[in-house]
Length: 131
Image 1: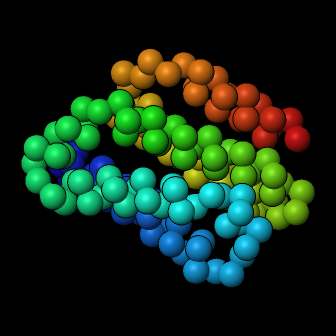
Image 2 (image 1 turned 90 degrees about the vertical axis):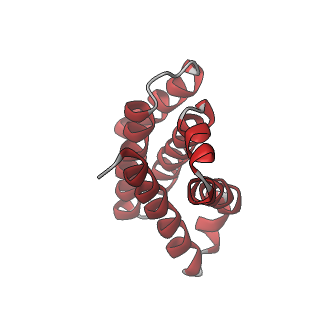
Image 3 (image 1 turned 180 degrees about the horizontal axis):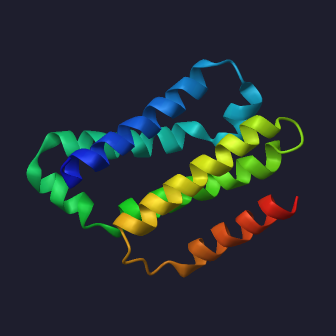
């Protein structure tokens, strides 16, 4: 699978996941996620990839893509911590999802300069493990 196809596939999976979560009438989860903003950002990337090769190159070389992956991962870990006592299975799902998204962001876009965001994620992961 070509890199562009892989990335487009990963973004599509994230959008599908968010849409699935939004279609279930879970208002508490919707409030915690702030999903509209995340969903819009992910949809924006998917649309940009579909538009043209120049747009694909711009986003693939953009730090913004990595930033959004890490922000999404941070949000997943935050949710995992908040849901750990109420719904351990869902909390574990978010922690796992956060780890996968973080790995994609750091592996594919390994030119980060935003170490503060990485530190925030590291702290949330510690809280997850210690709670």
